[in-house]
Length: 168
View 1 (cartoon, rainbow, N blue to C red):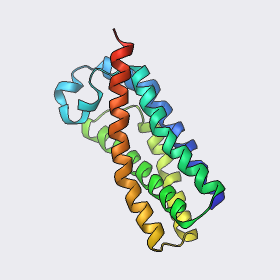
View 2: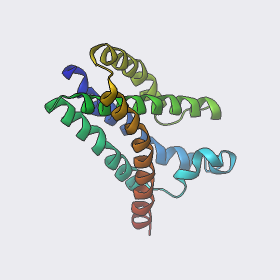
View 3: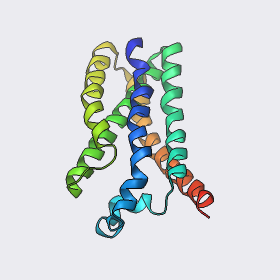
């Protein structure tokens, strides 16, 4: 199990680097995206690369922290949290692929989503074989998913706060 645990934050940062590098250009190159797809783009209106990077940094902390904890203090609850984080990141890859299909064009994060998705699926399968899915593991994994969604809201809030300060 330990050989898988530290791959999660590496996969996260590999994927999110493509987002940091590409999202500013992506939205500046086609400002009509906000009009054509208001539900998909609402969270990214008026952001800066600095703001986006700050949000990614904030999101990285729980991925890295939970992975370190599970690595150094292996137990069912921390494995469950780690598994929930991996499930969330895998869903994130599907979301980017789906958005790209929906708008029928490349979205920054598509390439790394396509690269990381098979690896994440293999990690899920291997860890599922190695883990014991008892009540503490299942509960901690299940609680992690809504916490990830709340953390995403916090990350977007940070992104907009930093963006307002970075863009006078």
